[in-house]
Length: 235
Image (tube, rainbow, N blue to C red; front, side):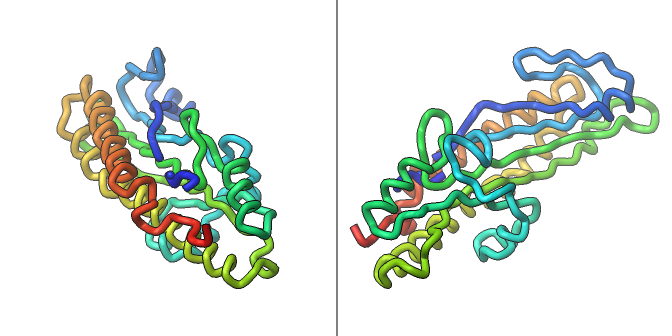
């Protein structure tokens, strides 16, 4: 997350699909966002930052895979989308004001950019009907929201240059959050696979907390991107 000048973290939310209910005919119990059923599970865990349309973000349509591929910082990752909110101002003071007014919110704070990352994990029952958590599969997806200077072609050259440097550094900072989400994927998978079936989900939750902690450290060390160049240098 990048402040105006950056951040991260949330509480988990979980999803169990109708297909899983049909597949195993299990009785599912959901309490406080935790499922207690056995069988295939798909969990959605996100250190939000809420959603790609959080706060009063003027997003330019849904997140786009093409947009992610067009940004070098994100192009190496699968399952990443990028959405934008417009900045209409053309002078430094106006641009900064719109970043503060339009930037996405997360956990009661506002940022210039946010990255929502998600872990999905599931497993199929073993052929003999027993728990198949040892073969759990974990995937990662991420959704990034960035600012877009709408009139980049009409601003002063020094403002355009400063914005280009800022936008590049901002993208690279958010890509660091995405990288950490993927780096921690093996830990989440290993934790689930090594646990016995009744405790597999709890083990996954603990591993995800480790991932959240790593994301928080990243923001603290980088000062939410400021040490990586996420600064409006015309100021």
